[in-house]
Amino acid sequence: MPKCSLIISVYNQVKELELIFSALSVQNFTDFEVLVADDGSGGNMNSFIREYSKHSPFNINHIHHEDKGFRKNKILNEAIKKAVTKYIIFIDGDCIPHSEFIYQHFHNKHLNTVLCGRRVNLSKKLSNNITIDKILKKEIENFGLKHIYDSLRPGKESRSTWVEEGFIIKNKALRSMYIKGEPRIVGCNFSLYKETIEKINGFDENYEGHGFGEDADIEFRLRLTGVKFKTLRNLAILIHLFHPIAKRSEKNHEYYKEVLKKKNPVCVNGLRKIK
Image (cartoon, rainbow, N blue to C red; front, side):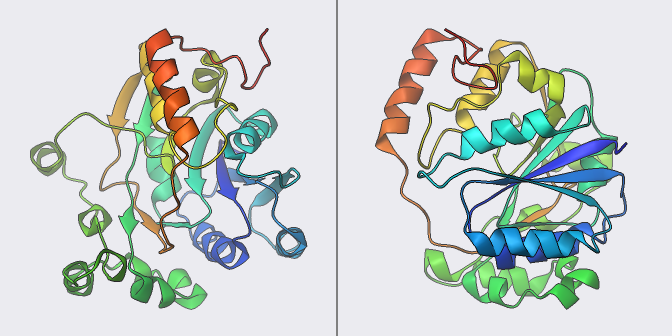
């Protein structure tokens, strides 16, 4: 029995998932299972996971449903149901975890607490330079001047952002001086006990389309239950690969406004269907 579950949300990101699996193969904490929450990818994804599973150092459970548009929250709920452990970590299928990523989430876990990490957004140039070999040799974890220089390039799409999130800071005194503000959930890097997310009935499946569904909404509802939030900034490092920014759903935005008004921590269309 593994000690924690890593849920990776994907959609037609076979190349990126191969990079993630490579990063998972060199984690310094290895007692975990992987659940691939697949929002309707094509046959290439299924073939890749099936072949990789034959020699994978960790157990992989591929949870898939039909492609009927963006239904990330629905497939995330299905993955939560399939998780065999009490502790769950969430990442996205375009994010490469540092070799200490799972250790930091599991080592810092607490009951009734959400651990919130951040991510480095790599430019298209630096993203294209990441290879399996560099991941296995942990070369991608060496953040330095090239990332700082890259962040100073003109144009939003041509430069890296949030590069400061790529530097590990373990000294408690330095962390308290540097890291300020209330921890917030970023959907691609957070963790909590399974029982905690079950209290709010999981992700709200009424969100369909990009925006608000897997971070702002779930954070708001968790806070209504009195859950504590703890930061893992500069500990649980995550590298986000470049891709064009998707347009946020205006329908989701309007629905979120209604959620804020009602202040009900339990969604009706989540892990369970509540009449």
